Length: 121
Image 1 (tube, rainbow, N blue to C red):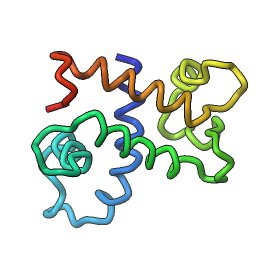
Image 2 (tube, rainbow, N blue to C red; image 1 turned 90 degrees about the horizontal axis):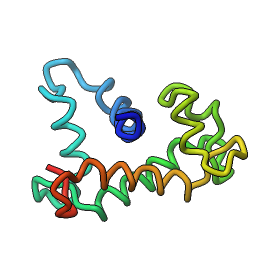
Image 3 (spheres, helix red, strand yellow; image 1 turned 120 degrees about the vertical axis):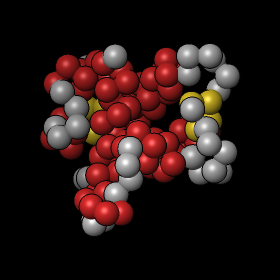
């Protein structure tokens, strides 16, 4: 559950800016469906591993505000708890590298892919 919270936090971070700029009448009925639609680059009604990986790579770049190639606690404070940050920082150097980030979110993808078909629906 905690790992899926990381994925959700990153997606919401990406999605929140666009959602906040829309009038209430144009906002999606379901945040989950809006997230899925945003991730589903090929409009297949599923999110495959490569779509997810590409989206999360972009998410990392957007979260890395100082563009130093890693995420410090301050850059993730609004979307990650201290515990989530610590779990993702596997080498315990006080920052999350892109490799650590991608390992975590792709592990989350595998967990969410309950039937192990390489797609989220």
